[in-house]
Image 1: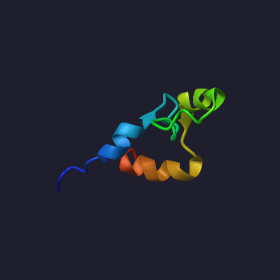
Image 2 (image 1 turned 90 degrees about the vertical axis):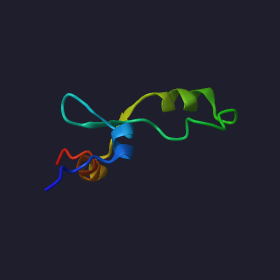
Image 3 (image 1 turned 120 degrees about the vertical axis):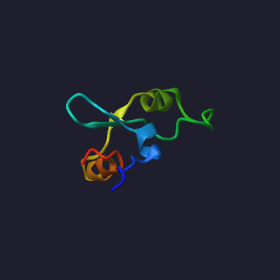
Image 4 (image 1 turned 120 degrees about the horizontal axis):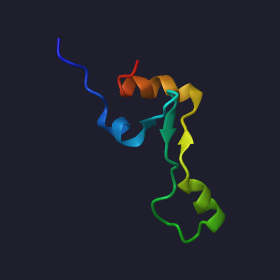
Length: 65
């Protein structure tokens, strides 16, 4: 039986924290930034955690589960 490959898209977008949670970047920060406020762009800079409802799917994509 061949090895199971991880999804390349998930590998590029998510990182595992030391405690086993999944870290992700915010969307809406790549273009059309002139109309967005400084406060909004500043908030989008920081990483956040993946929602609990989505964790299982992403861990399956990363072959962690």
